[in-house]
Length: 230
Image (cartoon, rainbow, N blue to C red; front, side, top):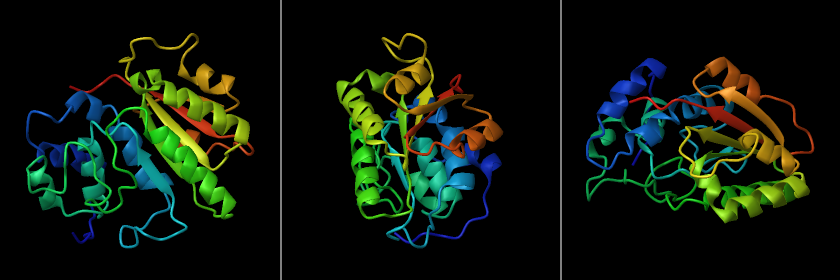
């Protein structure tokens, strides 16, 4: 499936999400990530839609893979996939499944949807890139409820102690966690040796500053607090 050149912007994302029909869109889960993913692809990630296999590209890992509608809309707006493909979302013959598939969608780094897997994979990517002395960075998006999974605790603990400063996690906190964390999610990452920054997850300028924050010697967590859009 070839990528296309696109001049679409943030204002077009609502229309692009409306192209995706069906009963399993996980709309609130998807829209809570919309601004974060847009800022990453529009202002932060060093990746070319025409060269998605470039070895030194930045990697974006959508661990919260059960709500990919916003992700697909951003990929279409940025030219990774044709806009018309969005209308096939969820069909048996579509590359755009209810969980993203790295073998079918250009630019998708992991096949995700099982909560608790993405952060561990992102840690492995960051460690491998550091061993190769690559300038590439890894950005992993997780949900607040997903952090209830024990595998994420292990990944956070290792990354902090290994000083993986090429690893960035954005935790989208839409108040869906069953347990939460005393003092908030930023405190949880800081406890494990991370640099952590809480932000308004709808404020593009705050998100950009947080993603660009200096954090030499430590992985960085951006905790994006959002009220889900209906």
